Length: 369
Image (cartoon, rainbow, N blue to C red; front, top):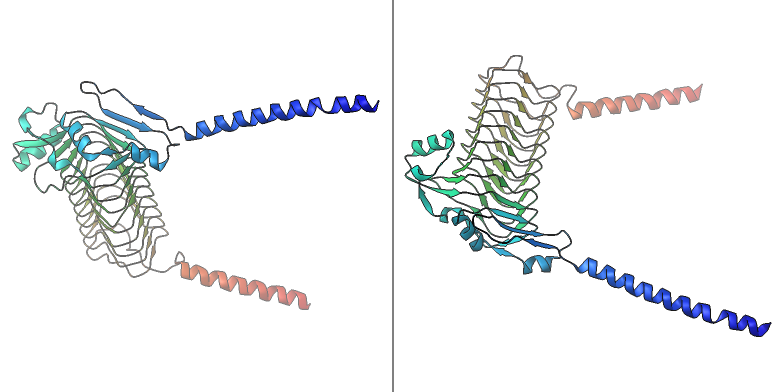
């Protein structure tokens, strides 16, 4: 009986341990191979086809660096009249759009009337054109992007999509006419973001965009709706003499430094609800053609609406001003809002403290009885 028990115990543990070890090695090997894999999707270049490169989320930084694309290569693609389609890619070097080849303005077909009018107004004979779509998503751009043009125009004929991309240096789309929709949502601009004199013909989206050291939309034109919902401006934010023809959404937007909207015109509904201005905010000589909502906005610095004009509803309900706002010569439907009041956090703190003291006193009296 003892011999039988011994002969029964030994073979089964040896087989089980061997099988288990083999299974573990197989599983670990497969897991390592899956984890190490970096999916790369690259389309075959064809006549007129966009330059396309997609890297998967599982790719390491070293693998992304190994697959980096140079700005010189992208500029060559754009000069060929092709588009760009990048996802999860690292772009090195400066993408200088003012180095695009010049084309005779009259030879560019199917230009929308607003762009042709801008060309005529400047008396331009030649223009630079991005013919295809320009999409750089969830990527990192190491160098500068843009034109730095003071005269002339760059025409982006297709959609421009920069969602989720981090720009480590300046972004300058000044003097750019965007014929298609523009989407910078969730993008991160670590340095300057300039859109001086830019023309947006279609909807523009800057939702949850993080703007860096200096942002300028001076004399930009938005012909369709634009949203900056939950965007953040870490540096100076200049929206001087900007034309917003349709709805503009700045709700829950954060302005850390000085901000200017002076001389701008809001042709559609404007929403600044729950926005926060940490420093100066200027809306002087600003025209609000439709309803303007400043509900629950916090103005912590100097604020001026002097010489502004509200043609629709002006809603400053529950708005907090840290200092006396200026409404000199402003055309406003009701009485200009004042600092303080029940919505002032300091007043609320005093009320809360008084209620707390009263409660303690009430409890003490009850215990004495």
